[in-house]
Amino acid sequence: MNGLSEELLLSQEEALCRFKALLLEQRLLRKRDEDHDLLRFLRARSFDVTKAKAMYEAMLDWRREIGADTIKETFEFPERKAIKELYPHFHHKTDRLGRPIYIGRLGQLHVEELLKITTMERMLLYHVKEWEILVDWKFPACSKKAGKNVSQSLAILDLKGVTMKHMSKQVRHFIQMISKVDQDYYPEYLGKMIMVNAPIAFKAIWAIVKPWLDKRTQKKIEVHGSNFASKLLELADRENLPEFLGGCCHCPGGCEHSDAGPWNDPQFQQSDEPASPPVFWN
Image (cartoon, rainbow, N blue to C red):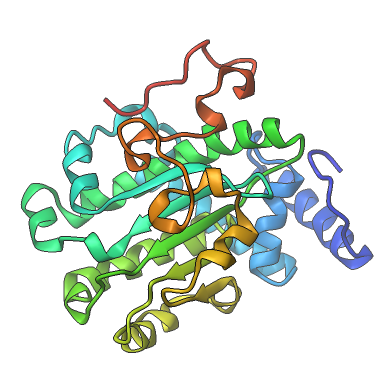
């Protein structure tokens, strides 16, 4: 199969063939989608071809509506630097499987201040633009470095400082919005999520959030308290983790600002990319 290196059950191979043929027949298949891309939709729908096709069509409609194909070039977000100060979140190097590591420090989220400089609608477009950069630029670089297809990420959410105050009505609405985008339009890109420094109050917060996540996503999530270092070191080398997560990395200017990873190394960029990394953010 084109672009496919993983082993599948015979029934899964047959489902993939039928799914691909159906999309080709109805002229729905995008040129960019290889077999491993189609498998994401099949897995999200338990290899039910009819449901996977409906999911794929809904994704195409949504992308046309929101302008996802050109959002990297057309959506400007000058408030990005200020937003990242009010909610530190960033990609930082790779784990032991070659997957990009996403880190979010939810306990440092200041929603009231954030909404003074932007809107939830613009935050959603920013989220989509970050997705497109990850899919079009960062995953291919990680794949080239690993010598295999890499199309999933490791997410680490630091909950230190999180309280019920972080679950305002606006925050709940935003989490629901991005959860729908992530699960419906970028399915199966999440490989694993580790939540660390979970406070006592998190049990109540998790009871609110969990119903918004599908069963497959729920199974990929682990919640840990303050004794999380050994778990993270099973997943990533110490030098690839910032110090506050039990690692020993000290990027110049701070790990949260470095965007360190194979995607910024010219030897791992795609052959049709410019000599220096593309500038998607000013």
